[in-house]
Length: 112
Image (cartoon, rainbow, N blue to C red; front, side, top):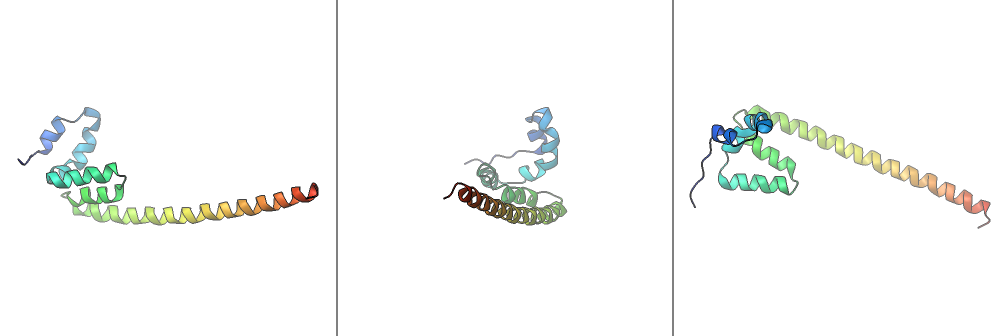
């Protein structure tokens, strides 16, 4: 298989105008990937493994501080998501308890 080499300028030349700012920002990470790494990255994105995909992309960026900052923010998002899951579970439990009390009251009113 022949290696495909693409430059950032070549990538930008093939990019629609509205997407050029995104490609200009993250393109260096994409062009630093090997063909296999890019295929793996696409597969992660397609399969919904965004966290791993972003981590792989940012690891290829020239500014390594981006990866560290992103990991910190991603960990904060994960913690917030876990907290929200717990809150939703508590809300569901509370709603179920209220509905059980209401059902018991209605059943008592109709004599069951």
